[in-house]
Structures are given as structure tokens and as C-alpha cells.
Amino acid sequence: MSLSILSSTTRRVLRQLRHDRRTIGLVLGVPVILLTLLYFMFEEQEPMFQRVALTMLGVFPFILMFLLTSIAMLRERTSGTLERLFTTPVGKLDLLFAYGLAFGLAAAVQAVVAAALAYWVLGLATAGSAWLVVLIAVANAVLGVALGLLCSAFARTEFQAVQFMPVVAIPQLLLCGLFVPRDQMAGWLEGVSNAMPLSYSVAALQEVGATAEPTGELWRDLLIVVGVVVLALTAGATTLRRRTA
Image 1 (tube, rainbow, N blue to C red):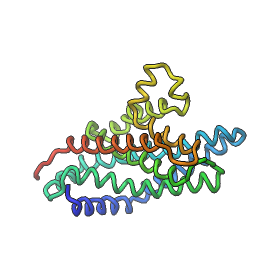
Image 2 (cartoon, helix red, strand yellow; image 1 turned 90 degrees about the vertical axis):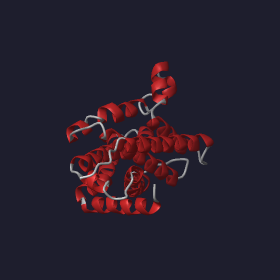
Image 3 (cartoon, one colour; image 1 turned 90 degrees about the horizontal axis):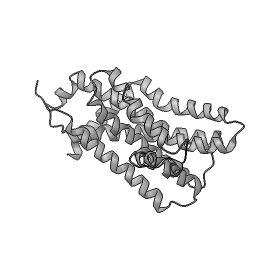
Image 4 (spheres, rainbow, N blue to C red; image 1 turned 60 degrees about the vertical axis):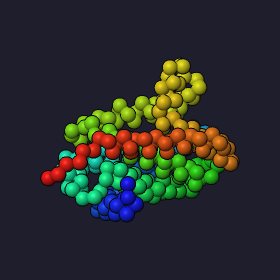
């Protein structure tokens, strides 16, 4: 992997993203709308809003980025763009990590906007720092990017790409500890939950909500998420095929 090629490829993806106003609107607007909806849903249940909103600051970026990148990469594969790119010195890892970086930057802006709304407008309060919440939200978004890129290899149409949502994203949402604490689940369900990266990012968010200073458990959970991101991007690179026109 070359830093100069990675940098130029990241800029190319960012230029594509900048010209796609609908995607930018989706990335920035949807979390804001959904958090506001949560606020009014739990208007009379303040503790519930605090718990759910904090978790959703990490879950929304994961789901959105998974959906966006799985479809975006599928378009790259089916439109012939990948074949043209691979006639240049761009490597597989350059391309996958460039997507991770570009959408990670978009996720950082998304996380800052959503956290600003949650803390300053909707009254979210956490014992830990808001910047830690933003950091975990960005890691979650990049996790969604990495898994979306990997899953796009197994889809032939955009409809098939969307079908990975209930297979990959929804089980993680159900078992991450949002609805039932993980230690209160049946043993086999807790085991499945332990194998899902979203469980660790939600646990990290709960640590921020409960403790004033970053804990060792928080950094451990965040490192697990980052490790899964690297593994997924590397595995995704192996699914790419270099061809000549």
C-alpha cells in the first residue's frame, strides 16, 4: 500500500461524495431527524431517552455507512470503474482503505453534528466527555464502511446489497445490549453477542455514559472495533479482482 496512492484515491472518493448531494444530506440529516424523533418519543421518560440516545449515536452511523458503502462499492464493481482503476498503480488495499478514510471523514462530520444536537439541543448528558462519544461514533461508522465494502463482494445487484442489512446489521442491533443487557441474555445469545463488533462499541458508549474518565475497558472495546475494521477491509481487498480492459 502506497501513502501517495492512498491519499490520491481518498481525494477521488471524497470528490465523488461531495458531488452527491443526496448522500451528503442522508449522512448529515438522517441522524439528526432520528435523534429528534427519539427525543419526542421519550419526552416523558428522560432516563430512557438518555440511554437510548447515547447508544443510537453509535448505531445510526454504523447502519447508514454500511448501507451507503455496500451500494457505492457495488456500483464501482458493476460500472467498470474498478477495472479502469486497476489498470493504474492503485492497489486493492489502497482502494479499500481510501474508502474507509473518505467515509470516515464524512462520519466525523456526521458525528459532530449529531452529538452537538444531542448535547446542546436535546439535553443528552454523560459522565464522560462528548469527544469520546464522537470518537466511538466515528469508529462505528468506519466499521459500517468496512463491513459494507466486504458484503458488496457477495452481491450482484443493489437489491441484493440491501438484503445484507437484516443479515449483518440488524442482528448486531438486537444483540448489542440495547434492548436486553448482554449479561442477562441466554448463554448462547451472549456468546453470539460477544462475537459481534457492535456489542463492543455499544459497551464503550455505555462506559462513557457511566464514568467520568476513560477506562481500560473502554479502550479495549474500541481497539476490538478498530481491529475488526482492519480485518474486514483486508478481507474485502481479497475479494477484488484485478483485470485489464
